Length: 222
Image 1 (cartoon, rainbow, N blue to C red):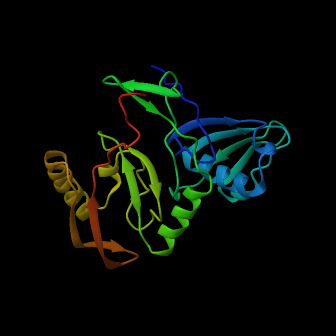
Image 2: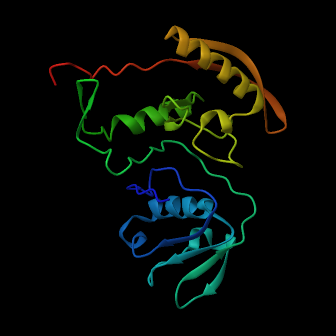
Image 3: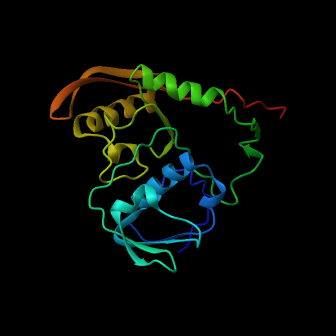
């Protein structure tokens, strides 16, 4: 009935269609730039008519135009936004509690985790945006683990969930499903070019490639 997971509101994808979100006495400890990002994520997560509960000294000024004040004293707000949009660039899936081990064993092979490189990842993300390229890392169930680049052209945000096939436009979804079957069978990269996708009342040509990832950090000696 319940799922517990550590959730970093600055980089993990938001939950959707929440009736109530309580985020109290957290935002006062982060920078204004990150506050704007977090407020955007909170607004996306609350369904229309849902409520946001903040701390006494916190103000949702970046999203106040999309809220109505229920209680100024208790910092309770109601979401009146109809359309929701969110950039998914650089999001990372949170680890489920109980699965977040520094070392984990898979079929007798030990995986050692390295510390995240906080310099390299932003450089990758900026470079991909510059060349108009999107990279999406998914697991065996097509669940999005991480994204790099601009998702707005290729991912439908009106019904956001973490299954990549469900959030791709129709033509890309068909190609993705077809290529996925081939890649899973042959265990090698496959691609298709010039897939026509509607974007901003016009059509753009998209190339889609799927590559199996092999974890090179696996080694039998630990």
